[in-house]
Amino acid sequence: AEQKGIQTDLVTLTRFILDEQKKSAPNATGELTLLLNSLQFAFKFIAHTIRRSELVNLIGLAGVTNATGDDQKKLDVIGDEIFINAMKGSGNVKLLVSEEQEDLIVFESSKGNYAVVCDPIDGSSNLDAGVSVGTIFGVYKLLPGSAGSIKDVLRSGTEMVAAGYTMYGASSHLMLTTGNGVNGFTLDTDLGEFILTYPSLKIPHTRAIYSINEGNSHYWTDGVNEYIASLKKPQANGKPYSARYIGSMVADVHRTLLYGGIFGYPADSKSKSGKLRVLYECFPMALLLEQAGGEAVNDKGERILNLEPKQVHERSGIWLGSKGEVERLLPYLTKKIKIQ
Ligand code: P6P
Image (cartoon, rainbow, N blue to C red; front, side, top):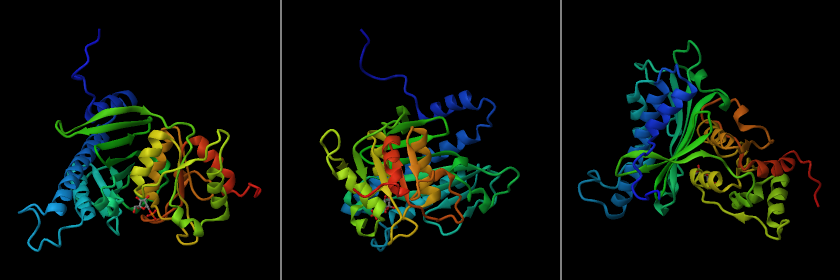
């Protein structure tokens, strides 16, 4: 009988990317592979820092906090610095857009052909409560002949060559797409390697779970209120939908990707353009969901990936999740539903 026990043929992220490259782009330069390796270093470093900073904050480990102690750098600033330095050090990133930086960062001396957009630690306000947070990222190849400018990143999400997130929870999970489906990796901290744990992940076509901040319902459109009300009624199986909302996008999207369901942060009368950012929150999550067989649309039911941002921190309303659940939502966004 097959022996259980130690898995001795682990597929690391590095091995996976090299296999992918051989399959999908045999004559690739290997630059994207190098870039993804720099990205994974940033995730490992951020994961380590989050674990450590929780301890530091809780018990103030001697010698770790700086002189005055109370100006210990906020974690999102540290995450941002780690990310900027890892991308600068990679040698093949020319441009970086970060949620923490007002303006586009140009690595002047870099000869890189890629632009990276990121939210280094999304949901960091939840950290003190021990809620999972994450790094969300997307990668564009520079436009042909471009020396690196804002035009390389103000593009539709369909032009992203890679995207994903790393969620820092009980374990660190990296969910990644390079355009051929979604694969998930879990960080083995002893080995210091991301190991393939969710090969060719597909989101269930339907699932009776909805994820939205109901505290905003007073500000929602009639269509959104009617849609959510329809989920609270007993369905054909006699049961209403379950509500699940963590308030950390990476955690809410991770659950949606694994279990199915729908996540929404629609624009409303309080946040007229929505809250989440197009480039480094909506696009990467939309690309992942589509590659996993799901869907992602804006407040008018249009495909998120087709949006063309006019500035780097532009926001949009977003709904994403199981194809069957997004299809059920669409008529409410285009007001084709008669009020029962
Ligand atoms: P609200 C976290 O602050 C964040 O940017 C996302 O991670 C999350 O989905 C959203 O905001 C939560 O916003 O208004 O529900 O607290």
